Every structure is written in structure tokens, then in C-alpha cells.
Length: 362
Image (cartoon, rainbow, N blue to C red; front, side):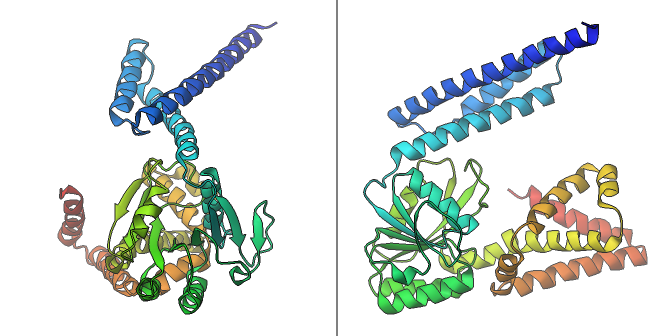
């Protein structure tokens, strides 16, 4: 065997040992998660995470290993451990045993996320969706074909369909808890309030993450109270065992904030991708030449353009605050163009300083 083959063989042995150690770490993580749950401690412990990272950096320094690489590795392992603990805790602490849930739009991507999430908590989940997608859950093509004996109904349909569904529920009434997961609330908030006034148990939430989220650490979920029946607290409990940040706000203030949080970021990335598409430049070449900023922006823009364009149109078109945000963006872009054409460095610098000041405000 050549020296190269021998070295590669030893490298493979070490790789397998690393995998074995990761497996041992995962097993310990499961035990730690179970103990945290028993003692009522939160899944995420920021102090402990810092200790793990600092210990790894210190040890890497002693071995003259690049600390950045070691930190990246430890953060990946921590994320994996949190995911393992979160899923186990959600399953253990789930309140769904013996309760039925209907997910309207359950064959869609976010709808399916809720189907799997609620199933993991012990709920008996059924789906109503005009899609012909295969599913192992009890399936209805139309939610009106179901009975009205669900403990909870989740509306995960596109916004325009959700308006129709809520109108029909307002007219016919609905037992059990009803909540939507839509990205916009202005088009439906009056419907939800009228349902609550009619005595129905109604809430509204906005998960600030996509259907690919398998760990809710660092993710946010917005909760909006509609009725006076403590419905929101029950819906909140669905996520109490996760590591997501749970935020309550008024449904009347939601869409203005979202016009910037989603609307502005979507607009920028759609425009970024369109400019690149019009440039005529080879994508692979630009990727090879990319700076850190361009590479990061490219990744975000790709995620945006991979999403459902009809949904993104809804988020812009049906938000009454979008036009104001887009006009503000257009004015800023026109000003940048003007400053460059006129060689007005002072105004250009002042604009950047204004932007910088936003991030420095505490």
C-alpha cells in the first residue's frame, strides 16, 4: 500500500471515529433533554452554549487549530442537539391525546408543517384540501364535507381562499378553536373579530419561518388575541415546549410592521434577482467572483425566488401599507442614482450614515 493510501486509510478511520463520537453526543443530548423536561428547565440554555463554545475555542488554541472552524462545528452540533431535544419535548409534552384537529390547506407546504407538528403532539389530524396530494391522514377535498366536532381548526390556505373560508364559518358558525396562520391580517381581521363577537373561539398567529424549519430556535411566532375566551393562551401552549420566541401583538398593528419585515426584504430580493437576470452575465461566473456581501445576498435572493410567486404577490398586493414602503424604497434608489450621476459624494455618505445610525440605536 502506498504512503498516500495509508494516510487516507487512517483519515477514514478518524472520520468514522468522529461519527461515532457524534452519535455518543446525540445520545447524551437526548438524556439531558429528558432530564431538563423532568425538572421543568427550558430546552435552550444560552449560558451553557457559551461555555461549550469558549471551551472549544480554548482547546483549539492549544492545538493550534483554526478557532473559527471549531466554533462552526460546535454550533452545528449544538443545533443538532437542540433539534433532538426539541422534537422529543414537543412529543412528550403535547396535549393532543384524544383531540381532533382539522388543517384546512394541509397539503400545502406550511399546512403540511402544521399537520406534522400537531401529529407529533398526539393530536388526531385530518386534512381538508382541494389538492390531490397523497397523505396518510384522513383526507377531505372540501372542509365543508367534514363534521363540526374538531377541537381545533387550523386555516393554512392562501389568503384569498382564507377570506372565503372565514366568511363561510362566520355564516354557519364553528365549534372548537379556529386560528389562521396567514402572513397578512388586514384582509381578515374584521372577519375574525365578527366571529369572536358571535361567540366563536378565534385567534390568529403568524409563524415567521418557512415550511423547511425543523428547529424553531431563533425563529419567531407572532400571536394576536381576538376573543375574550382565553383562546390565544391555548394556541400558545402548542408552542410552549419549543425553543421559538413567542411574541404577542395587536392584530391592528401587524401589517404595518410586516410591510417592512417581509414586504421590504421580499421587494429588495426580487429586484436583486431581476437585475441579475437582465444583466446577461453568466450566473456561475458571478458566483465565482462574488464578494462576501454578494454571496450572502445571492443566497437570500435564491430562497425568495424559490418560493411561491403568487403568495409573494398576495403579501404585497393585499397589504395596505406596501405601496408606502415601495414608494419610500423607490425614492431612496432614485436619490442614490442622482448622487452618483451628479458626483455628490457628501449626500451619498450622509445617506449611508443615516442608515448606519438606525442600527446603532438601542
